[in-house]
Amino acid sequence: MTLYTHIDSNIKRTWILFTIFFVLIIGIGWFLSYYYNSSYILFTAIGFSVLMSFFSYWNSDKIVLAISKAKPLKKEENPELYNLVENLTITAGLPMPRIFVINELSPNAFATGRNTKKAVVVVTQGLINILNRSELEGVIAHELSHIGNKDMLLQTVVVVLVGSIVLLSDLFIRWGLFRGKGRSSNREGGQVQVIIMVIGLAFILLSPLFAKLIQMSISRKREFLADASGALLTRYPEGLASALEKISKSSIPLKSANKATAHLYIAEPFRGKKVSNFFSTHPPVEERIKRLRGMSL
Image 1 (cartoon, helix red, strand yellow):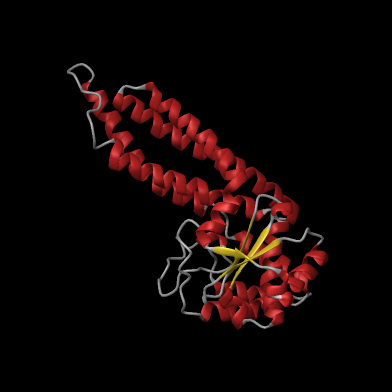
Image 2: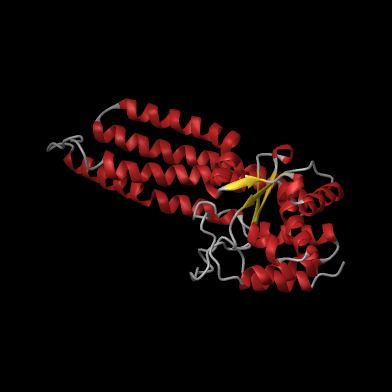
């Protein structure tokens, strides 16, 4: 896959993600409309889908920054980091992104924003503390590559949409299905109604799993590509390889991270928890380091 086909693929995946989200919410809305014999619930679900799709596109970066408890960094607070990011963006031919810092000791970083002009690079204080300049350049170059490759729109939108599906499913289970009286069955249509109820309930119960599968559909290849693109940007693959080694050796968990935002980070943000490769949002760090050290520039 070339860089250009990767960018096109990300744009297509974003629209597919919106479509799947739309279908899931309407499916839940249709079932509850049938259950309560009220078409208003379906219309509400359709309206919610449309509004959340637009809202997630325009505001997903703000939501992610708020969830992550990231604060904007002024140039005078860390001129070295600011100049490092500025120099790399000039080399990459990108607009200068805003820089945010998460005041936690766990080393990590991510990029967010709906386009290159609205891009944000986020680093933790722990990352700044443990990395030397070449390693920090490698991490920033990796995140700038996500921006240039248009990975960040897809990554950031999925946080809001997946979170919305999980939240709605939980609310419907707690409030919608188990409170009040639903459609009553009769002799003629009783069996059909029971089947619909079972399917609908299973659909709502499995919606969080569907959401997780959507999140996992964000290919791990984007990390490998960002690693390679970042190494090409700095012309020094060892910088990022060494940074990934240090990050992976840290045992400090990132408290502000959660399952919805985990895939944004350069490395798995949860420490001390064994995550199956199947469910992991990141490729094995050992493989990433091996590929980087095997690159010849």
